[in-house]
Length: 363
Image (cartoon, rainbow, N blue to C red; front, side, top):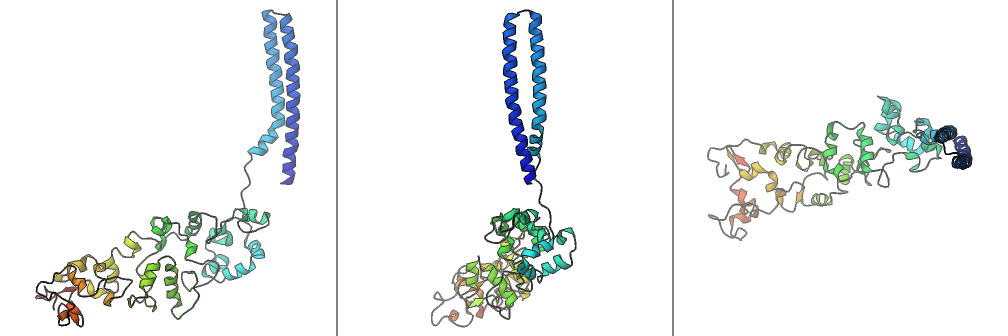
């Protein structure tokens, strides 16, 4: 590289000298010819003057072109692309990181059981060719490597496209159309690559490891942004996520879906029916708000009311049903609504009934 720079500098000096010689030569030739033209005005001699001038200019231009060609060639030559240096070169400087990575599921595949040419590049399959990084002495962000994490200057799309080289099918199919990708979320906001954390999904680690650590980790990761939902899970009536019975991804696909709220199923009701199959029906007598959307009455993440109700009963019913035929003070001390399950003391089959006389959902 140094020899090439010296060669370019030497060629540049030669070009400058050639230009000076050309300028001096042209000045002398033009001056002499002008004086001769003044003395000889014949048409024949003027034609000879133009021919000699053209031939002389062509010769000098050719000479100058030959001198400057090496400079143009050096400047026009594209810079050499970085090349792969191999895993051992990476390991020489990054031994601690290499050791941790080799214990992850991804590391075991890339380093010891590569299935294709991309995986065989190991470290460089994600970070890119490392020859420039090595030649410049290493360092964070040196040599055009792709870096990951919150402090990375690499655009989110470039980081995510690196992961999508392999993870582009299955649950990641709709990533590009999902809200997380649209808001600049990168894979490493939720996943840790270089160190084994959870047994599945390589989720960003949490401080305390409980019996339900793998499932709790999902709540902690999602709760980094979805603070309202995390707070709802702490309410008295809540989905059993913090007990480790279900996780966020039992209902949602964070990598994107064609369904509302990134639900795995086509609708809210279909999602609820995965567990609450007894509510699916079909029923002879259907309750319209139930068929429309379970979330008309229930808050799925957590509520201060029993049974995840959005509003305490009987108010949840009187939002639609006026109190005609019933006491107008549903919370009165002598009211039938004041004890036990309120409206459902009588209307026990509120989600739907198959009884021939069940049009009031009483049986």
